[in-house]
Image 1 (cartoon, rainbow, N blue to C red):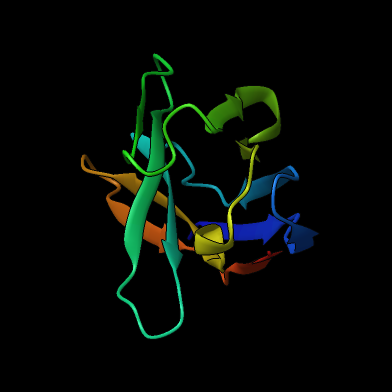
Image 2 (tube, helix red, strand yellow):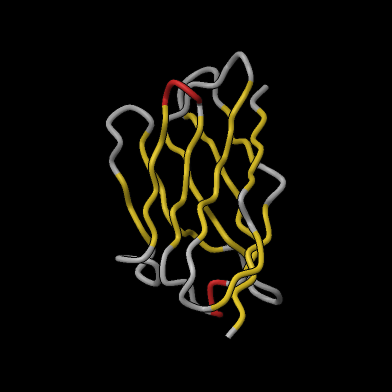
Length: 119
């Protein structure tokens, strides 16, 4: 069983920065990927950024490229999302996901952390 706990959300003004953290625990934690998603009110959940746990390869949604940076600390089982130049359209609940394809497979989600950006 893998548990994920996000933190770092809050209310900020446009142009500000926030850093989200996602701390993982559990005996079977050995992911292929760690992924950040977000869901704005009335919209579907969307991909934000991902990082492979081994090589550290990253991918970003076009809407956040150049502003957001995903990183990981393998020693702490933690993934981060540094968000700069925040815009009101970044307002959403941000969710952390950890997934693994090979046995023991899993697909774990955190409870989410609210990010609100005022104009």
